Length: 204
Image (cartoon, rainbow, N blue to C red; front, side):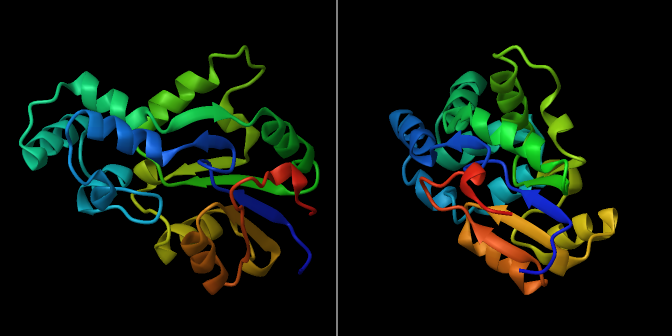
């Protein structure tokens, strides 16, 4: 590997434990058919892409879910099912990020939405913390705020340009192979964090 100056971390499956199956099961319990065809780790249809790039409001998202399914689900029912995938923060991984910040510039780049952002902030704050979550990073980039999502090349380029990062000296870590491949195509060093792997086990 080239000399590394910066590391960009994904959130879900890297720092925050998630389980897409829990959200799928929760929607199926609400009699929403074929939820996997709408959203999974590897794919997201236009509705969820809009949500993750901040191009649809939460209220209109809930309305569109009901329109698509022909159901009359409450906001709370949809919200609870949608958030079901969000589990717990990996505390050792957070500690590890603090350690590597002494050697590298550290960033977060996450495909997420404002509904999830509120929920994982709530999860994070269930434990007494010495600092806000975003303070673990030099800067955190959320797709719903920047209007771009991985694996769109423009998403990575925004971070690289905003921070004056040299791709070859930047490591990108994500649990999705397609997102890592897109980062490598731009010259970054890419690491796919496979299931059961933790960032604190990596050697930088």
